[in-house]
Amino acid sequence: MENLNFIGKRVLKKSDVFNVISTRFDEKSLIIVLDDGKLGYDLRRAIPSGLIRFEDDVVQKIVEQKVKEINKKIAEKPSVPPENPIDSLLKKAVQLFKCEGSKSNPYTNHSSDFSCLQAGNIYGTKAYDIYMQCCKNLGFFTYQKGKFQLQQILYAVPATPEGYAVWMLPHNNLTGTAKSWANIINDDKIYEVWRMNDDGESSNRLAFIKQANGEYVFMGIYTLEKKDVINRTIDGIPIKVVKTYKRFSDKYPRD
Image 1 (cartoon, rainbow, N blue to C red):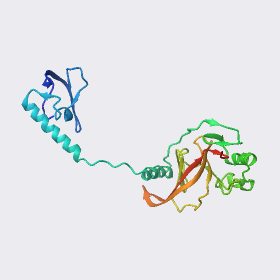
Image 2 (tube, helix red, strand yellow):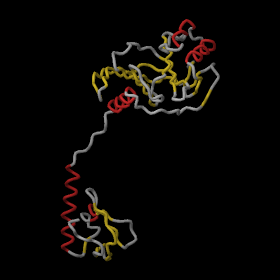
Image 3 (cartoon, one colour):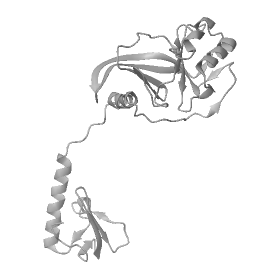
Image 4 (spheres, helix red, strand yellow):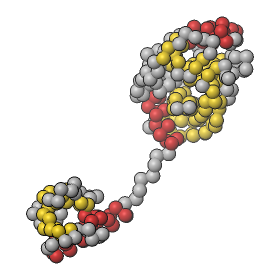
């Protein structure tokens, strides 16, 4: 600090005198350590409060001036506003569209009991086989089974006696992949981010998501909470629409 060596300088603390044994100065802090057994003192607070004072008046004045300068810089520095949640979401979607998403397998609990679907349980690796088991045990509509075969959309509405859609999501933030849309699962919500105009569908949905290891996990029953029109291009990727689905039941059938 201004080529001044504080090591060995004497500091008054109440009626006691101590010596400076080490220092740490940067743009935001002025820390000195005394031989009093304490961890240290931030001069930005200790000097204005009168807790400590340098015995040498010249040193004291230099420190007081430096403290004022640093406190002024900190007060003038504009605070960084928190990132808008939608912007954070769109960044994740862009990563998926650019095939830069990470892969993960957070769910490990396997179940072969199709009498009741429980969120967080893994029910298999083939969308068609899972759907057929649900037809057999839960009354899903068999005429929709073709939509869950290979190279199909893996989505059907209506698919259950209640009129719910069934939604298998092979492309999401667990598999690290996307198509014309990206699915991002976050707690009790699923965000559907579209590069093009969305499908216009708004039915309540039973959702199964695919993990990176190919296993499908039941996530619950979701309803469309809101639809946001974005119409922005981020890092070269056009984003048209974001649909937010919120879970209202973690099991099927509902209690």
